[in-house]
Amino acid sequence: ADAPDPAAARFSVMLGHIEYGLALVDCSKDQTVKQRRAELEVMHSLESARDLMEKLLHDQSDRSQLIAVFGGDCTRIARYRALCESGEQHSLEEKRLAGCLATCESVEQVIQGIG
Image (cartoon, rainbow, N blue to C red):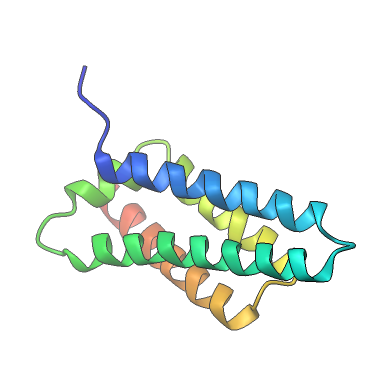
C-alpha cells in the first residue's frame, strides 16, 4: 500500500489540535484567562491549517498534492469547515475565521472542479 501523504498526515494532526483546543475553550468557560488563551491557540491552529491549504492551492502546476490531502472522501476539508463553523459558535474572532472559511471554500471549489 502507498504511504500516506505527509501533508495529509500533517493536516490531520492540525485538525486534532483544533478539536482539542475547542474542547479546552469549552472546559474553561468560567476561567477568563484560560479561555482566552485557549481561543488564541485555536485561532493559531486554524490559521496554520489555512496556511497549508493556501500553499497547496498556489501550486497550480501540480494539483496532485491538493487532491491527496483534500480529495477522495473529502473528510479533511469537511472537518476543517465544521471546526471553523464551530469556532463561530465559540465566539472566536470573526475576521480571522472568515479568512479561514474563504480559503476552505477555495479548496472546495478546486476539488469540485477537478473531481
